[in-house]
Length: 77
Figure 1 (cartoon, rainbow, N blue to C red):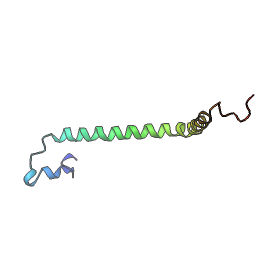
Figure 2 (tube, rainbow, N blue to C red):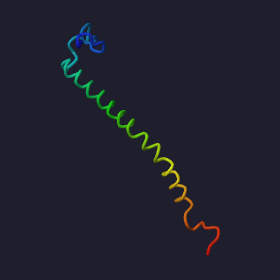
Figure 3 (tube, helix red, strand yellow):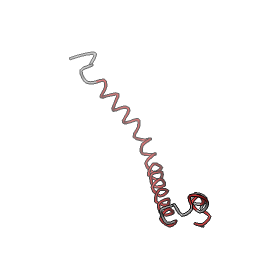
Figure 4 (cartoon, rainbow, N blue to C red):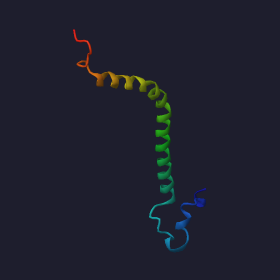
C-alpha cells in the first residue's frame, strides 16, 4: 500500500531519489492527520448547520430591531 503511493513515487526514481527527508510512515501519518482535521471540521459543520439555519432569522431580526433604535419612534409620547 505505501509502496504504491503515487505521490511518493517521484522520490523513488530520477534526480529526487532518496531526497524525501522523511520516512514514508511519517508522511503517511501527516496525511492522515490532515485528512482527520478536515473531516473533523466537516463533521462539525454538518452538525452545526441546522442550528445555524435556525438561528439566522433571529440574528437578522435582532439586527433590524437594533438598527431602528428607540429614538426613531414616529409618535413620541
